[in-house]
Length: 168
Image 1 (cartoon, rainbow, N blue to C red):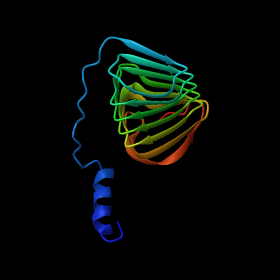
Image 2 (image 1 turned 60 degrees about the vertical axis):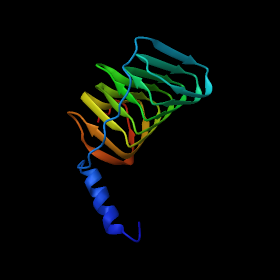
Image 3 (image 1 turned 30 degrees about the vertical axis):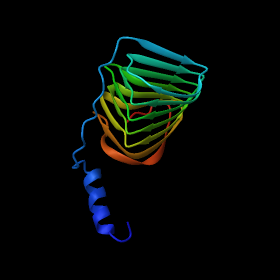
Image 4 (image 1 turned 90 degrees about the vertical axis):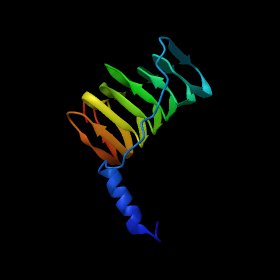
């Protein structure tokens, strides 16, 4: 970076301005089943399900998943290179620690979170009403995360604390 800082900064500027073409991810069609994971620890899960519920689980990793909805409660979860596309709430998180990387999340309400810690890196969030709805206090770290919706339309790269009934 130090040897070619101007090239790096030009690339970063184009990325932040959303001018770089990204290849669309290809996922298999969502199948009609739903999965529930309770008290699962140290699990790597590749999925193509209508919905997944993860409850009271630690160190669960979802990779290359295609979902219509995801519910996480009292758990520690990583989501990598996945797609969540819902007509309602795409991702509901309660009292959990969630890391999301290189994932697309789309819904009427993309993320509904309650008392949780989120780390979002290279995530695309698209909503028709609210990108992120906070209930109670939530700590969220955004690393080059794009929010597109009626309330927010920008790339975020910062840490925020959202309080009860805050919306992005």
